[in-house]
Length: 93
Image 1 (cartoon, rainbow, N blue to C red):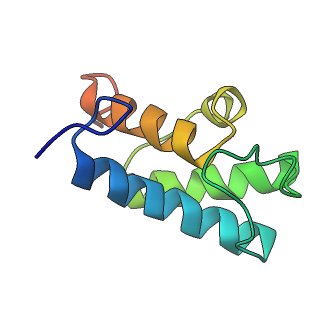
Image 2 (tube, one colour; image 1 turned 120 degrees about the vertical axis):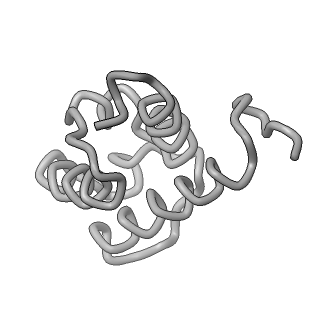
């Protein structure tokens, strides 16, 4: 298995990317956005962020800081941050 462009193993990051994308599509009520498009430019707002992060946290079994979303506002960036969070000793809850 070769690492993808973010340096993480492909399948795990791809699964996270798919989960992030699904949560965005549900919150935005459309899936017309690219994985490198800013959530807020795709029509999102701050109120939707809490729901997305709560849902992703439930999927991952972790409490995720809302700040993570605001510093990683694209599908690719958020998936990478989630992968790093899960890999860190503090992230594995």
